[in-house]
Image (cartoon, rainbow, N blue to C red; front, side, top):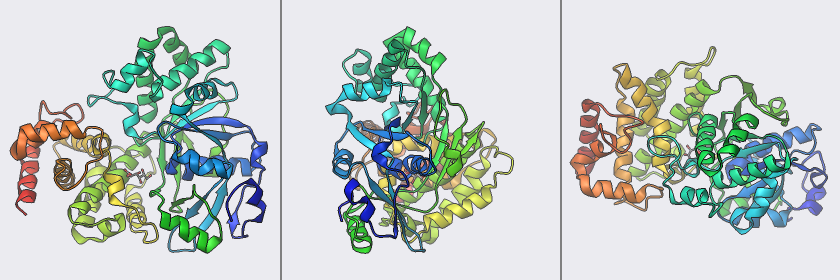
Length: 470
Ligand code: CS2
C-alpha cells in the first residue's frame, strides 16, 4: 500500500500513525537539510509534540541541493515512516510533521519567503559540516566561491545567503526575530553559526547584522541518533513485512538524544516533553558526543576500511580496531574535557559500544569516511590539542589519524571530501615523509586546530611508513 493521506487510515495496525490530521496543521518551523537524519530525529520529536496536542508546528523542509527528498515525499503528501531496528522486533511509525519540501535551487524565492514569514518561529539546520564553509582556521571562509557569490548578491546558494535574505524580509515586514538552531555535528554549533552569519551580514548589510544580533538567538545543540543511508533492500523489506510502500522511509536505532541550549526568542514545540533536554550549557554533552561517539566512528571508518571491512558492527568486532576505538573513547577522548556533574562517561562509552555493535542496523563505514577534513577537527584534533597541552599523548587517535592521512591520498579509492584536491596536492608536494608535518606541523594546514608536537609527528610518520610497507 502506497503511503499517502488517503491510505493513512488503512495502514496495518502494527504501524503507528499520527494522532493528528497532518493536513490540518500549519507550519511553524523551517528546516534546512531534510536528509534522513532530520527525518529520524527533529521531525520525530516535533511529530510527538503534535501527537500530544500541540498544534501548527509542522515543518517546511528545504533541500539546498538536490530534489531527491522532494521526489520521495511529495507524492506521499510529506508522509514517511521511521523504523527502529535492534535485536527486538522493529517498530514502524509514520511521521506527519513534514508539510512540504522545497528544492531551494529551483525556487529560492519560496525559501526566502518561508524564512521571512511571521508564522516561522524556529529554523533548524542539519546541512552537514561543509555547508558552514568554515575556514581551516575557524570562522567563515569568505573566499569560498559560493560564499563570495552570495556576498555579491549573486545567490542565494549557501545557508548564509538564504538566511540573510529571509532575515531581511522579516526585518522589513516586522515579522519578529527567529531562533536559528544548528543541529550539526560541530563544536559550539550555535555560536559558530552566529559568528559566521554575523561575519557574512557585516559585509552583506551591516544594519541587518545589527538587527539579527538583537532579534535572533542561536542555541547550541547536541543531536544523536545513528541513521544509516536507506537502501532499496530496506524499502523492499519494509514493504514485505508491513505492506507499506514508502519511498521516503528511514531506518534507525531505538536510541535518540537531543540536548538543546535553552535560548529561544519565540515559542517552540515542547520537545522536552518527548525526550529532549533543555539545558543552560550544552558543551560537556556536545564535547562527549563529538569526541567519543563521532571520534570513535571516524576511527572505525578509516581503520576498518583499510582492513577491507564495510560496516561499523564489523569494525567494532574486529579485535584490533575495536580495542583501538575503545581506548580512543575511554582513555583519550573522555579524559580531554571536564564532564558536567553527574555525566558518567564510562557508562556512555559502554552504551556507545553496544550501539556500534547493533547487528540489525547495517551502518556503512564509507558513509562515515565522507568529508573527513570537516569532521576530524572536532572529533580528534580538539582531543589531541587538549591532551597535548597537559603533556598527555593520544596513541589511538594518532593511529586513526595516520589512517585518515593515507585514506585521503586517494590511491585506494575515490575520496569524497570538499578538500580532496587540496589534500591531493599536499600529498604530491610533501610525499610520505612530509605529509604529517604539512598537515599538522607548526605551519600545517590544520595548525589552528592542533599544532602537533615533534613526538606526535614522529609517531604519525612511523604509522604512515609501517602502513606503506604492509
Ligand atoms: C557519523 C554520524 O556519518 C558520520 O560521520 O559519525 O552521522 C553519526 O552517526 C551521528 O552523529 C550519530 O548521532
